[in-house]
Image (cartoon, rainbow, N blue to C red; front, side, top):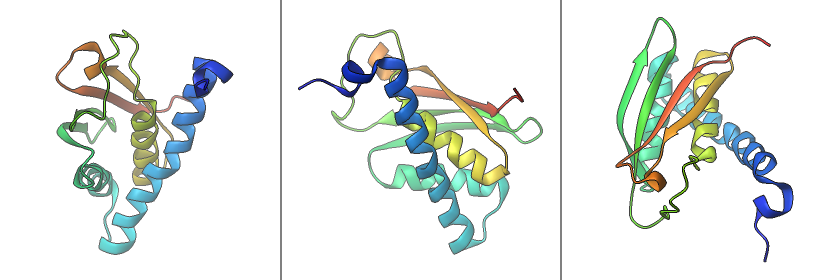
Amino acid sequence: MKSFADILGQNVSNRIIKESHINAGKHMVQIGKKMFGLKDELAFAFYFWLFSSVGWGAIRELKFDKEKLNGSAKWEDYGDSMPTTGKVVPIHVNMAGMISGAAEEAFGQPFETEEVSCVAQGKPYCEFEFNPKKAD
């Protein structure tokens, strides 16, 4: 059976995966807002807590600049769910999408998230950087 990337190409499949996970991140922040009245950075931090509590992995470090609305997060994958591929290209486009969606929902503006290092590259954590999206 051919993979998603084999059929559509890596760029198209990455975009579809990332875009589909943006809504997941938004929904997770909406839970914090509706159930607990969280706003702004607390609502954003709630996403990371909620994601970590599921048991797939844990956010081990979260850096956030309140003035610039940017920062980074280190995610530790649990167990064998993350194959070591030896690829240089980061592969967690789903997580990047969720972080972008969570930030957008928390702060009311679009965000860009990029994975800058990955356990697939032999790193101890997958690291993501997020920033407000620049106007086109």
